[in-house]
Every structure is written in structure tokens, then in C-alpha cells.
Length: 458
Ligand code: SF4
Image 1: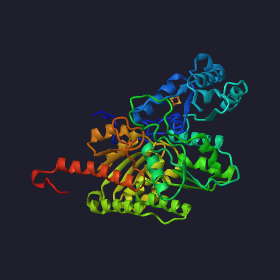
Image 2 (image 1 turned 120 degrees about the vertical axis):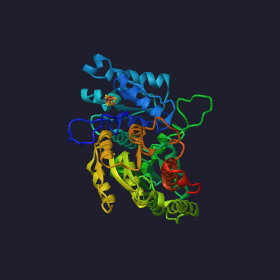
Image 3 (image 1 turned 90 degrees about the vertical axis):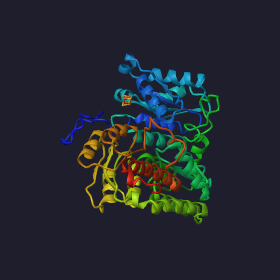
């Protein structure tokens, strides 16, 4: 019993988090920065923060994650990190030669109050930023929000720094995919192109964090949105922001500054959310839905109908990010499962009200909490056991202790592979999700079945 101290009795807590269901803001900012072509993320703070952010991303993606740090010492912690950052900008451009440095702050530099805007301007004035190169930055204090907030802040920063309208439409459509896997970014692009859209997807980590093994190391892989594309996104016909928390800020900022009309949607996880995404693309492109997409939708429906008896009224506990959990809960409800315990570490009351709306008609009590933690989820499970747990790799302790069928989903996943190569978004991704859920549910049935009920055909 690894979590033997989790009690069934729930005592109200306000000032204590036990096993958080989130990671820190700069991790999301670093992930977003890696979705820009030829960009080196830079962590303005201590070496320890940067090492933690890099190792979390490396463990999840199983790729080397490069990032620089201002390497604060006792002196910079007291007097500010301006000298460190200017020195770092100079060293990075002269040694590693990226096109862009994306600076995010940390708890320490935010507490000191370093003005990175002013420091970057000083670096430009002192000739430390070569012509045609860029330093962008986002403020990411980790004592508020989560990795999702950090992703949103850096995504907004890249749009605001580069976007510049020429007054002529470029015939393209901006898609901000949210904090999803590189595989999902590829899938969202494939579907958008199939719908007749010319997309500018930002950030785009496909080809960066799921690249092939070639035997040769490349510090800046081919993937990622380019600076030219980011500049051009001010001339796009419109923007679809997928995931209100991770993507809406960038889309709304583009709308406010450059009059690029935006709509905010859920990430297309599951049937209904993908239907809404496809409908938005259909209207944007002014086309009918092509046969290939209709066929994929039909295949997803086919799995749902063929295997419905195994989903029906199975109780599910979930931990993850709000932008994932909202469409995922909707999907589970649509296939007649019962999401009964839902927790995210990311704060925000809108999450709880969306989940309540989606689950209000269910014949069971639903526990939902934003800014919650894994300990609370485990306590709920002890009081009301479930048939399935969906969570990141930290869920494995609960799954082991309480012997729960378990699907790894979200960030980080540090003990399995596949997530960066196989999408869970759009109709094809929905099929994969159902496959993963069915695998663990049916494995459990096989394992527990008495010999006379052990079936070859299920
Ligand atoms: S100090 Fe703040 S920024 Fe650094 S790792 Fe901890 S939470 Fe993240």
C-alpha cells in the first residue's frame, strides 16, 4: 500500500495540497516555446527550476529538451537577474545561434520583480541581439495557475510579439491547439487540411518532441511554427482557439489588436467536441464535410455501438487539466459512462460549472473540484469506488493500491510511451481513447472471470 496514509474520512483543508494535480507554470511556457521553429526556451531563475522543467518534459516526451537558464546565484537572488539575462542572451546567440529566445520567468525572478521587457530592450540596445533574431518573453510566476497557465501566457506572448497585419488577407486560418501532444497537433492539422483549410498552427511541437531517431542530434529540429507564420497570423481570416484556458488569451489578443475574429472551442476530444470543431472548420472553409472525415466519424460511432454494453454505467474517476477533462467528461457521458470524481489542480471556477452542466442529469452524485489534489481524489474513490481511473502517471499509485483499471491520460506520462505518436483528438483519436478504455475494462473482466464465464468472444 504505497498510499496507505490516505484516509477515508475527509477533513476540510484550505492551506494544504497533498500530491498536486498540476505542475508549474514555466513547464507549460517551455513546452509552448519548443513549438516555435529554431527557438531556445530560457528560464529566468535558478538552475534548479530549469532542470526540473527540462527533466519533466524529457521524461514525458523521451526527447532531449534543450533550454537555457539565467543561473541565479545568491547575488542575483537579492539584486535581480538583469546582468545574468543579458549575459545569457549574448552567450546563447553567439554559441547556439537560435532565431528566437523565449524567456519565461520563475517564482524567484517574479518575486524579485525583474522587468524582463526592460532587460530584453536593454539587450537589444547593447547589440546583444543580432539583426533578424528575437527575444520574446512571458511572465510565469508559478505561485498562481499551473502549467496550463504558463502555456497560455507564452502562446499569447508569441502571437503578440510577432503578429503584424499587412492589410491583405493571407487566406489562412489560425488554429491554437492548446496543451496537447505533438501527435494531436499533427492530427488537428491533418483534419483541418482535409477540410480545405490552410492552417497556421501555433505553437506546434510536432516534429520537435516526437521526431524520428536518425542517429544524428539536431538542436533545432525542422518542426515548429516559424516566425514568418506568426507574423502572418495577423492577416488570417480567423482563429479557432482549442481549450479556453490554454488558447483563448492568445486568440482574443489577436482579435483585439489585429481584428482577427476568434472563436473559443473545446479541444476536440470525443464525438461531440470533434463535431463542433469540424462544424467550425466547415463554416470557415465554406465546404461540405469530406467523405474521409464522415467515414472516420462513422467508425468512431461503430465502436461506441458495438461495445456499448461494456461502457454502460461504469463509474470513472478522472484527474487532469481542465481543457482535457471537460470534453473527456462529455465524451464519457455520451457513451453512458458515469464520471463520478473529477479533479484538476488548475484553479478556475468555470471548470466546476462546466462539469456540473455536463453531468447534472446523471443518476449519481458527482464530485468535482478545481485547484484540488490527488489525495482528495483518492479519498473520494475510497468512499465511492470506481471501475476506471483516468489520470497522468501519478494516478498509478491509486490504481495499484485500490486495484482499479487505469488509463494514463494527460501530462505528465512518465512510465509509458505512445502519447506523443498516437493522437487522442478528433474522431481517430476518439477511437484510440475507446480502445485504451476497453482494453483495461475487458482485461479486468478476463482476469476476474470464473472459468465457466471466461469468454473467447466479447
Ligand atoms: S520555484 Fe517555482 S518556477 Fe521554480 S520549479 Fe518551483 S514552482 Fe516551478
